[in-house]
Length: 120
Image: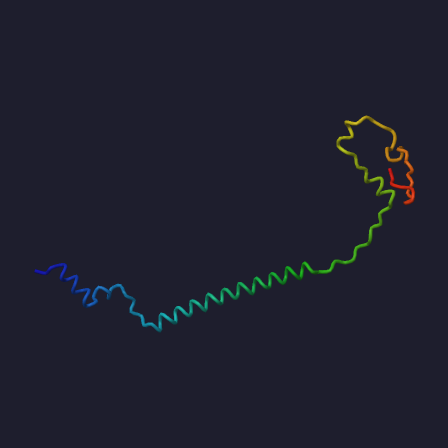
């Protein structure tokens, strides 16, 4: 009667357990296949990089085009002063006054000669 443990030990000793699972291709064939895979991968990478460089060059060349000189637009001072009128949002809360505070305040003349002393 055959013991299953003895049969298993004999298979491992003689290497029969590996015959069904191993790929019996020679090393040179496997190496060539690996090299072809690497070469194809590098070729795809180079093509991708070349396409990216071409797209970048096209974008740069389009963005660097010199626009034609535009006709200068002259702004009249009166038009500028009429169009720029700023009002503070809180002005609606203040009472209406009909004078310009900067022109209505009197100017106090102070002596500016250094011999007369400090300005007060």
